[in-house]
Length: 301
Ligand SMILES: Cc1ncc(COP(=O)(O)O)c(C=O)c1O
Image 1 (tube, rainbow, N blue to C red):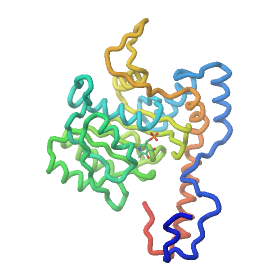
Image 2 (image 1 turned 135 degrees about the vertical axis):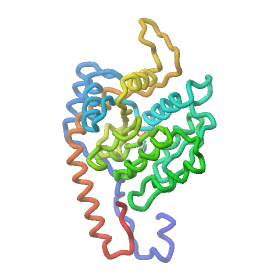
Image 3 (image 1 turned 180 degrees about the vertical axis):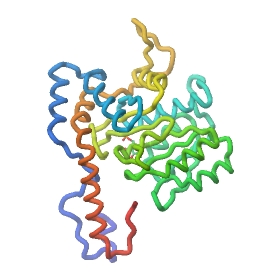
Image 4 (image 1 turned 90 degrees about the vertical axis):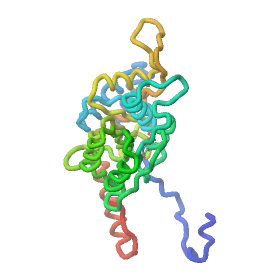
């Protein structure tokens, strides 16, 4: 028995017989078809048709020019943050991050993966308070933070639980300070703010295909941008920074962050069900809202 259930205030409460999983995957059948095709055609690698197709599907859905398929949302955040770090502060010495000693404004209520890559790159996260309306970065607090730290040039913000942050205000504040935004839309694929899909607001943005996301490849992530050079750089970094050469030529630090064609096959089968999954989430939300209506609790937005 869980220790907290021994407390007197929980007496009479019986745990569920089976665990209630957090946002478990929903498969439809087509996933298997694309995975099988990859295996039958021997594209069992980090290249293949499934990868090309899901990149196009995601870019089209979000409304961005480029989507680069990567091994996880965290990998996408790492390369997004590194890219912004290089744009702002130049290429670091070997063994140093692009953000060495630089402060970065970050969402304070989010999953740890939003912020970890700031530290991979040597940056110092400065947490910006969350607002009650959206449970996301508070534009008022962000504005105040720029008064305290006017030199900050990078904002890493997340849209929590599929609810978009107030992007109009956040983008205006970033623009006023010439700051770049890395938009973490890991939890908000398919959500729109004032008719624009999340994932389109950041200078660069990311999505996740983790098992608990609205559509999943079991894992996987996407880097999103509108600049072909940025997309090519991230694609290159994600494949060990191999230069376009007939031999193994490496001129920059590289990573093994590219998406597998098998994972992309699962995502290829899932993405057509994005809207259906969102509708299902709405139904679940309403069920909780209704079930909890007589209790002194407030639902998230
Ligand atoms: C807000 C947020 N950012 C980043 C991530 C990291 O994504 P991944 O698990 O694909 O690395 C997640 C979830 O896992 C997330 O919820």
